[in-house]
Length: 151
Image (tube, rainbow, N blue to C red; front, side):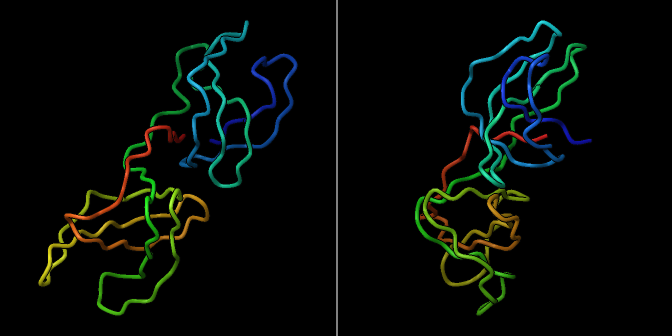
């Protein structure tokens, strides 16, 4: 079930900015926590889909966890292409630019061939495009993005 993103941390006086869908990637903007008088914990996030910023309840007053840290989110540190498949001369679906985030569906897998390559099955956080990134296993320029969270 979607949860609310609001303009301020206090629940009594806040305005709904938009709904955050299950599985949607969020960037944590600050470790600072707000504890409204109604209970629970709220933190400030940026929605990766559209860049909207606001406050989200991470833990409810009864201890329900609404948001958790996401694993397998990465940042591109150099331009790379996302391919439709791992087949040679596969269609390029998207080009990722340095600083762009993506989510890997699984751990990297080695790709057969003369050199050692790794394949990541991925989804671009910005627009949801799915595909494959193939890079040299010894020169893969990816960096974990630890400030990503999801519902």
